[in-house]
Image (cartoon, rainbow, N blue to C red; front, side, top):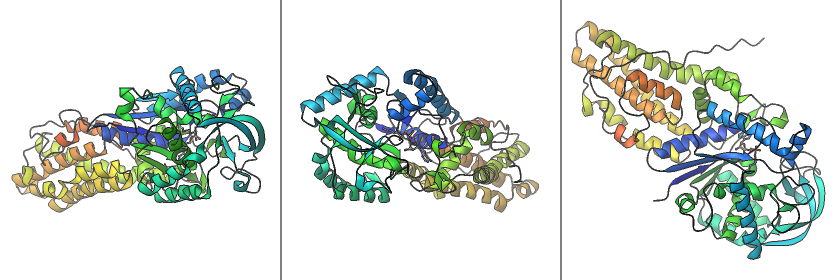
Length: 507
Ligand code: ME8
């Protein structure tokens, strides 16, 4: 069986990371954590260190590009750690393991005639590291970022992209789910139908990049960068590790780079004799005042400060709960606080606190025997784990969280309806035991299901519940029949899981 392989874009380190970078990486983490509970999974992220944009940033700081990249990479790594991201590998395009293989790919494709020497004249946007046809410019400017473009004229190596157009169109038709969401699929299909030019893949007007083997200039940063997805897992045709993971199960990207990943990338792979990824999901943007958050727009939000203020797990929850995956959504501290205080603090945190407090008060903190598999919860929520898992792996994160909240809501309702304080007062001990058991078992399940989303907080919930084993140890096993939590388990109530956060009133 092939393993699960998920990737994020490798990020330009032309500056500090912002919340958009944390977003894609957290999404990949949720997928990888879910996939890992059921078999081998590999999660790759990293940094895109070549190209004019990074070279310009280094020059502006008075540093060599390499020194600049070496100084910035730890900030990216610490961002991902701050957001409780557990990746399997972090690739840097300046590493020899990558660069030598990019050169090998270049040589291979040149031998096969997919790379040839020609003259390039045309418009280039440095910010997006993208060539543009004159017809695509908007009022003479870059159609993506609106910046001025520059005229470039040089002898370049070209990749014979146009030769792959028919195969791309066929592939799109045969695999309507391979590019998601549908809006991006349609947009890419429209580009293919318009026609494809060959792609210039070398540059001679600056030298921060991987040298073209036996030729002048450096390899175009996108050709270099895309290959990270296979160089990291040891590409070469005969490498067993490569074949365990390739083709990737899911490649996550922001929608602005869908064209590179769904048109140029499969063509390069096919030229090499490799398969296209199974799915490319091009997600939406986090916006402020309707504008995409990005360093250069001057609205970058410090992601470290947000994790500090709201808790990394609450941020993770917000990012995945706020909008259906694929759509844009706007960010504000008020919205994060609302999710934190409402969904997490009131619905889940209070339920947790009340349940452990009642166990303490009525049963000295020891989980009593319940009604076991005959509990009505067992029948009602028996298929929840499979549903949640299916939704996560189908990248429907918000629906997965909503499904988990059905259980949270039902547990809250059971306290209101069955009134444990009355059961206690009237000495209806069996009924009280059954209810207290359902609450503890229900919370144990909620913790397992939410663990990929909020690994640190759910680890703490697990500890307070006194549940045995590791929380991420096999969903199937831990989520069998209603009754997995052993009666007699001692709970350890502790601090609130999601203490309330008050936002300062607007001036
Ligand atoms: O494009 N909302 O790197 P990059 C959501 N190096 N996601 C966002 C976002 C926002 N406002 N801003 C950024 C590059 N992202 C290339 C990729 S891959 C072979 C090379 C996320 O630093 C999103 O995933 O500009 C987006 O595609 C990525 O960061 C762009 O990062």
